[in-house]
Image 1 (cartoon, one colour):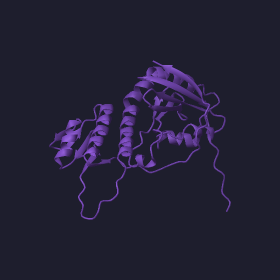
Image 2 (tube, helix red, strand yellow):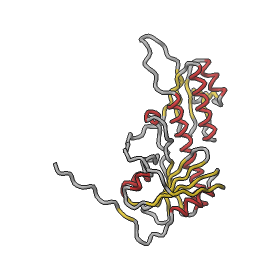
Image 3 (cartoon, one colour):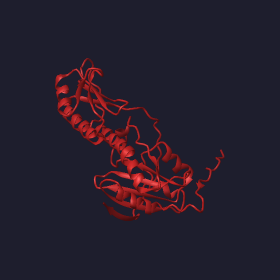
Image 4 (cartoon, one colour):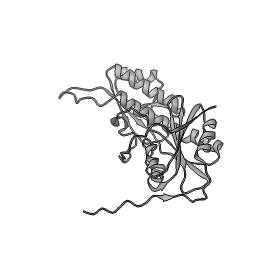
Length: 262
């Protein structure tokens, strides 16, 4: 059966003067923490996928990568392992696209049910872009990362024998970013309270505030670990997303790098 060839990628205007490397370098100096910048220039459309394999996005950034030959990208890597992907916005010449890169080494099962911290469009002014990333993308990344780590630490257990009763805590993300945990077991309730959860009569659950997402992520991990030591399973519920996956080649070594630290 004859298969039609894939359509050619769309290209950017010849007069597009944006410089990914310069933007990413200055951006790294505006973001909180110490970052290293790895810049990649693409000779072919396929080359950009070598460095976009772990882009944690099923929305605007993924669509741009599939449809356009963007020419270049940069990876920003912070000392704590946080990684960002930066490239040109193909439809707005005054903007760039920034997305998180998924954590390496986690089993595919750890990402089940975890909502991607989709990337954002940012202005070509690094200071304004850094504020947008810090206020929007990084908090959502922290939450998604905490869920993946939780899933990795608490893989699905074998089904219990018939008639056996399993203790578990069900945690559900609420619309305001807080986390509600439901349990009827006193040891589980004590473990939750010790890690920052507080009883909320209206919710009928122990609630952990989402005001400080980094602190929230650490509390979820600590609570899950303590519950596991007590032999209590934890179920973490997240918003359902389409299970779209793309298999791409592994990036080769040798990318040009430039270190930047605030």
